[in-house]
Length: 198
Image (cartoon, rainbow, N blue to C red; front, side, top):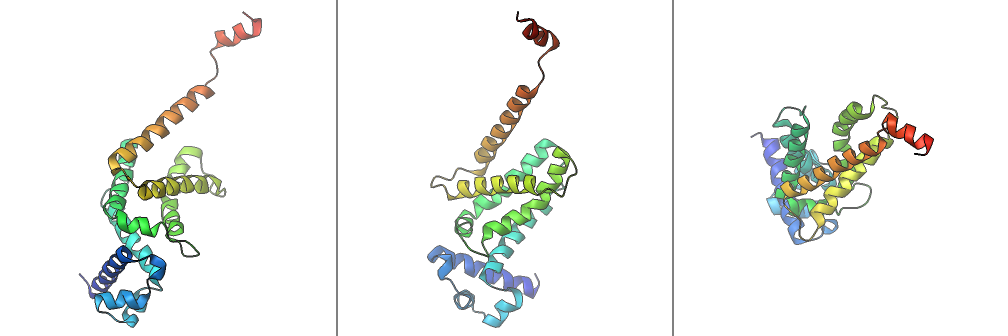
């Protein structure tokens, strides 16, 4: 492992430990450095601030999960990827519970939403066409995913990833099937009966 990576991992471990002990807003760079025996110069060589470090931790873990497998093509492969991402969140749920509670200009929630937007955009192109100028669908779905994962992780009795993803999958698939059935045109004989009043 390169020296740069070792330094970043040490700073990340230090921040995770501190977040177990105190609110994120009370943690400063000096404390992070002191915990792992580094100086502030080393920290600022790699990160802009503590928010940047939080985002790097997520990016590293998220990329590791996504890049470990080929891009999904089938519906089952897509759900498998969602489950792997949720497993990563669940393994480090103490950290991510705190991360999702960070508010303000550099909130982790905003970074997470930006990271999932390219994946969502690619999927939405398949589902609703190639209108990339309209941000409404991206905003809608990224907000829904963010809210669902945040609520799941912050729940006192946070369920394991498999049942969580299973419930989400069931809601989406059954909801989509029901909506599709409601939108189907009535058979010709039923329409004719309606028109004649029989």
